[in-house]
Amino acid sequence: MLINYWAEWCAPCREEIPELNRLHEDSADGQLVVLGVNFDGLSGEALSDLVERMDIGFPVLLDDPRARWQQPMPGVLPSTLVIDPEGKLRTVLVGPQTFETLSRAIQVTSAM
Image (cartoon, rainbow, N blue to C red; front, top):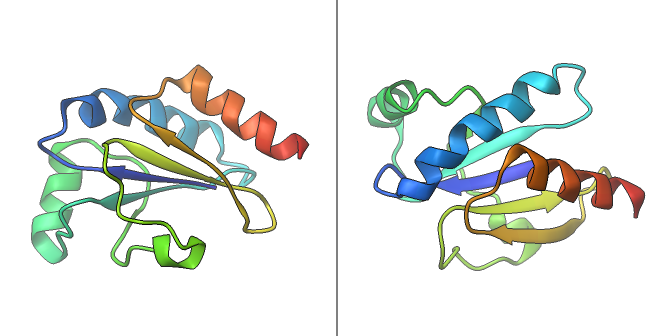
């Protein structure tokens, strides 16, 4: 599972969203779940409108799950939590990622 923290005002986040969309689309078999969390805590129609405007194709959570892994609020955006199949946090990717770097992080996590 990837949990990505993003914001509208974050230019690197906007660059990374197509990479996350691609991973989400490529994982239609359910082997990987890509989820987003809006850093600014938007909800309701404001969040729905923003998700549509930013062309986010993966689910965006209403509740921030980072407490489950005792993680602080990210200090840098984008940030992505990489969670293994057993639900254990394996790494936090800080800064913009590509399809390739995200795929590598998933492969390393799967091999653990």
